[in-house]
Length: 275
Image 1 (cartoon, rainbow, N blue to C red):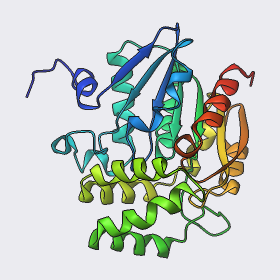
Image 2: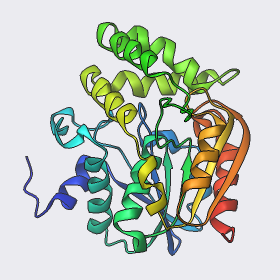
Image 3: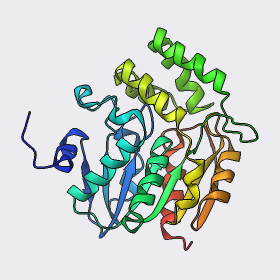
């Protein structure tokens, strides 16, 4: 293994950090569960003329060396938050916009609580402070159902992926999107995928939403079985800083995969919007 002066330097290689574009302003793209940075391949080109664009893989992704995955470190989202802040420090970034999908939306929120001056704004796609229902809170997923999901992932990962991909992406999506999401899920080591799923679905960040003072833009698919619109409304009401919510006429939990063009346009508009 190569020698590194600090963890940030190690992460630049381990997380396959990629920097493209020629603008002065900086935008960071962070993917969600089951994918890797390739999920942004049809979104990022819309930003490279005006921005310096940073993308990377979460340590759990199949594009990273699984021997670097520390089950204890990533038992909570804090390990991912530390990775994000460390890689931005290694790149000497002192101000950026952050685009995070799903679990990375929550990673971005936590990072912004720790280092609010680092982020000009957060753009969150399909984010949820809690994925499972709890009393009057409707997260979209019954906790008992999640136990069954974990059992299926553990007993037959390939079968679970085959059923999960079309459900997550929604109806009438291009075959290319189905194939791409299947590829990145299958590239994950099954035990790591299960561990990440348990971590993400056990997280409950409702109590920290009010601590976020950075401007937040929420992008929400009109139909998303994983994160219903009520969750986006909940976040809009409870975040502590200026917040806007934009619904897109898209289906599924990964609109940047199934409908990249409208997502790219929405991000561009929200980056320019006064909040």
